[in-house]
Length: 197
Image (cartoon, rainbow, N blue to C red; front, top):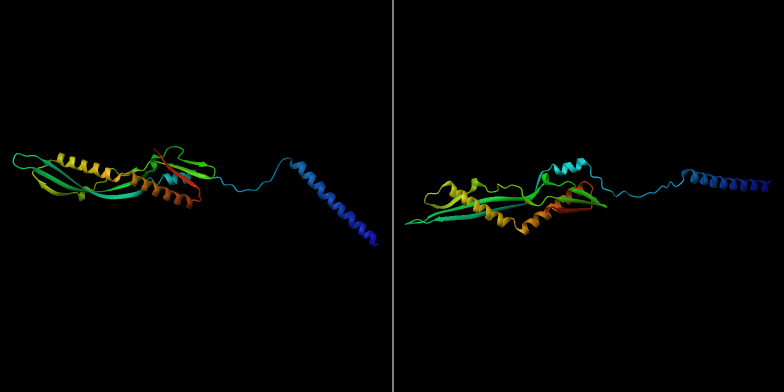
């Protein structure tokens, strides 16, 4: 009786092994070359809505420079000279205008998001605060054209003193850091940020 039970167990185990082999062969033949692979999808999928929301910000200021310029002019007269000395104040705002982005300004290279931003530049060309402009010294009679000429000289001086390579590099670094933070908040860890020529 004991041998019969052991024989039945051996037959049952053998039958189970044969059944598993037959099922495995059947699955292999029916699925053909189909394979199941697991892995992480590292692709970046910026949606058009996200791209538009970045562009919609418009002008992004990354460096603000307050400055003042003392400008003077002298007009020679027979008995005395006329002088006009004025102080101009202004704030130059450096940044990018997102309306100027080129097509394809956001691309993907492997797992890195690459942004090509517009060149850093002046966001507002009317940066002199005329309400704060003061006549420091004035002698003689001066026309509106004379004051306009002084304004233009002050404008050129302020631009030359503030749009330096150092200030432009600082604004670029501030822009890179701001965009990295923005993209990290959107879930993109690897970024490369460049600027147009």
